[in-house]
Length: 507
Image (cartoon, rainbow, N blue to C red; front, side, top):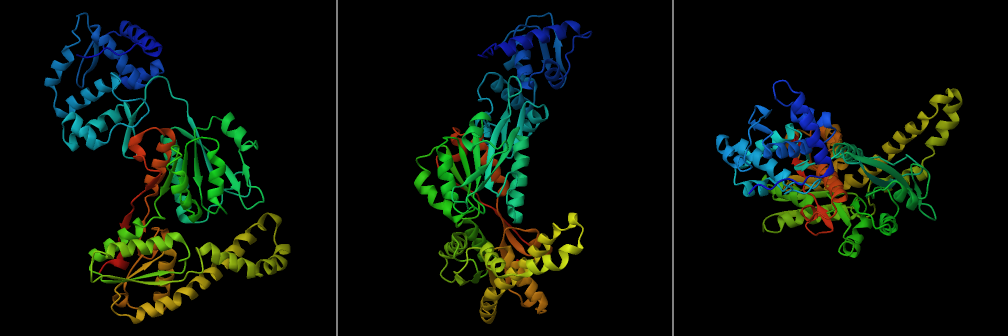
């Protein structure tokens, strides 16, 4: 039996407005659902519910593709099921999903079940459910965000407000250095816009005696979070001195937190706080062993039996985990060997840079020799020149560490593939081979991590982290913290990436 939709105040008012529209039409035909939604200032789903009320009363009738018409004949509420026989499978599926939405089968603002679950529930094929969802999306009944679909009812929902807490020395001064960081923030803001979310940036400087939070309106953090009704926090652990300590300070607010794992210090929080804090989840696409494992599987599938791993950053957990992933991929094969060429002195390229900036006097010489000859508005460019100078020295120091590894690995002709800790190392090695005029036919297969623009420029194969999936899941966790279909009860969400194959790894 078809259940009558509940008449909320919004629905009752919409039904009244539609009665007026029906009376004013000359041919009895209603405008499109989208136009009616604009006219009544409600969502398309509310219009569909109102139309369903009027159809049950016999005031309206409709057929597929022809819209809705006024009628003077009474219509039985059971006729809808019989009408389904006159439509094809896709049309029947669309009608049934609409009916389920109208009758409240799916909760408002929560994601619909997965496509696999929907195909099983409606007993249709994958292409059919995809076409049905596409039609409902075009009609603005549901909306798509990533791989999930949502529906919205009633008046326009107020925009949720989420705070991004990231390292910065002042207000609106988030420190962003790497290409992956820029990509993360770009995708995050795009995803937030699609989900009608307001993102507020709060900088945190934890290199002070007492960590300082710089809110947009210069109020204390606790006051800002409460006064702005912030529903969740995204913590970026990049560049922080101790992201774990920052996370501890945020947990006292009892607000859902999505922690972006890009700092080894925050890893220890997973086991300690994860199970106890249901509103806390860690999102990791780069620190686990998964990237190394998938790269190892890829190279082994290409027929490589002896694979070198080159890393000058092997003090870091992410480098160690990539090597562990490679070894795990090789574990099931007796004839596969992973050979590490690593240095355990540095965590990442930033620690090389610290050493360079501490020793460099280039900036002082540049300022004293050039600044007085520049117009004041051009003097701020001196810092960028100094930065490029320091980057050059940093890369030279990194390559000096790698050069020994390169020479040793080159002597072993049985090694047919080199895995670099990241694209930075793969680019340095490729540039060095180009300088030495090493023929392409004599180079081992080469692959890095990050899928950076430089790897694209030099045609280097690379592992691309699933940053898009990361930001989508972060937002979904904050918007729907009680939805078990998102996190499956685990405090840590590891996201699989993909191999971007280019000439450097093609046999």
